[in-house]
Length: 466
Image (cartoon, rainbow, N blue to C red):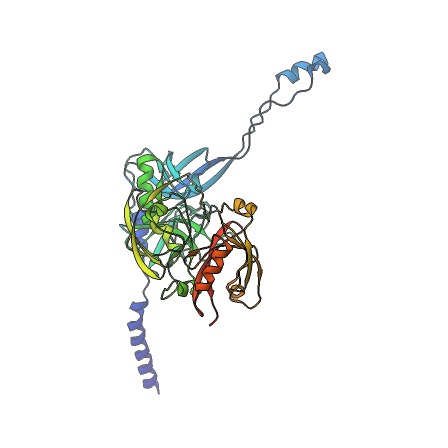
């Protein structure tokens, strides 16, 4: 029995020794020792209030002579309160350029950088880019340590990554985890989406912002930027700006202090199952053009509302969020191929990408005439009145007044007040045009329907009854 037990233990030990190498975790010590000196703590002084200046004094004629001189000489003490905040950053060149987040230094009165050897430097802000949340700083120093940026976005989901920063002011803290996902879209307050964020489970907390994210080769693959949290601390959802965006933005900020990114001048939406079928796609994919900016790059190239962009400059567009990620990195003025689906057929169009400066915004304009009733889709419609056309900047269309229950329109989610401007590939400029368009539709067909809902353009896939 004892011999049997010994044999069992020995066999188990052999099994463990065979499995352990596969379970071995990476050793981060060399990465930390080599790269920590180039990570910096950023100390920011923000204005917290306004100076009050002189106090409001009473009328000196009402003050007794023996007290008047005290009031006339008294002034309010300085009342400019300052608030301190902290973040992280890292040195990318021997001449002192530093990368951090825009939100770390935005609105700062002064910025100070502290290295791991306790050297401190005042900072010059070379430029900021709110759209990518990146900022480029510069210090004047000697023998500065430097980090290496990875050559390209070659991270894979599941790969180990490491962060160094100053969470809650705790200098040079190190945390590690894996890449949870890539290409995450986190639209800004302006509903812009130019950064394909790296999602990780690395513990990132306030103070880590602007710090580097490393791969196991010790190369910077991203800049830690955001966390999702309900508690204010890490819950395993952190997001970093990928190195491709960092390289692009840093090069432009270093050259001119501002950033210009590629721009098409389109409003887009995702393609759902019904829309995919109606456009003749094998599966939901691509970015559906809902609206074009008049005389914008896409309009000039001949793209149309209802086109589905499936590839741009050789890169597959699986979701609408993928398109701004690709376009934003293209140098304005570059001509690239765009693969689209139009009227169920693939086409390739060349487009000269426009430029969108850091502070630019743009509006999109629509064009479309009028008349009376329609029916086959389960809709009661009428001409859009001049007030509606003027409010939504339209030249025509039909307004949905009633939806028949259990109809194709009801199942598609069309709502009263929607203004229909396109059915399949037919522009709807009047009720007569609406009637002609629905007469052409085949039983059981899936068709795209373009409408304006509370001022916003939208495509809906509509499935007709067999």
